[in-house]
Image 1: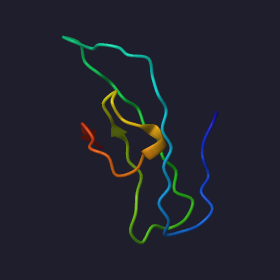
Image 2: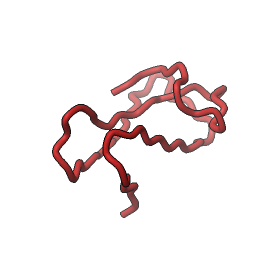
Image 3: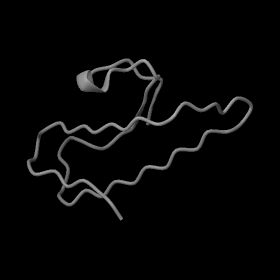
Amino acid sequence: MFGIQTSEDYRFYAISAEYPEFSNKEKTLVLQFTVKHEQKLVCGGGYIKLLGGDVDQKKFGHVIFIRIY
């Protein structure tokens, strides 16, 4: 199993991955996301941004997203 462990509280962390183009036209799209918080959260969480194919990953961060969960 692969994962990411962050090192400091009260920081923003981001990672992105590019996937080959696909279509789910007339099909259900299912995304799975699991997060394990090792410490008690005061204010925070984990989320997924589903982005369009025109996003420049070198400028990843505050981008317009299609869905947020």
